[in-house]
Length: 254
Image 1 (tube, one colour):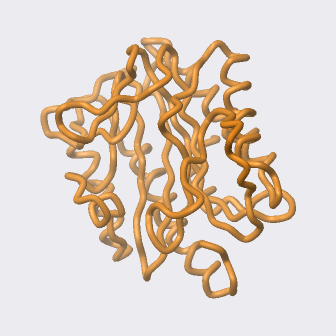
Image 2 (cartoon, one colour):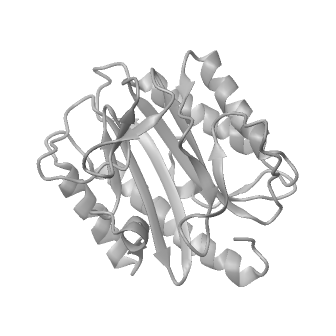
């Protein structure tokens, strides 16, 4: 969507605060021995307290309130009572929701407890790259140039990007134009970021794969060549200068 009046910005700030708070509290709540279903139930209780609706459920009938992906799972992981979390797991939580007709999206990867499996470096790279990408987004900047920046920064650190996942427009629904805000330079993409537009910018930084493939459950995605992936995501409003980070309260950079 494009912000055209103050009431729309207020609405986007409200739902963005809700999803940011939910993500932050889920990250603070999780501990080894807990199932991903327990963690999702906790996130669901927060969203319900705000009278907010799960965006993936509303849009796609996703079997959970939030997406929780663990270790080799890249994204869209289904919460399960059978999936028990362990110390050192690489976890990604993606929370998107709707409130009063406005939609917002955010996500973050983190290591549970002690970094027993050496995932922290990947997580840090994803966070740093998202920060750098956002500082370069403003009205008139080519979408493909931000993709190029993300891939270049990933390569500098010895990582790859997932080429079939990307950010997207958001606001009045979960996925809007501009879609396919990819993590690499598509030289055929001449689109530019538009001032006042609302977009969800996400990193997909991987150790071994360039593509994510869907599993038999119809949701969970893993790498075509295995390995691990870290994702971080903010919903922003594009301006003439640095964007307004609507989901900053998730504290994914802390």
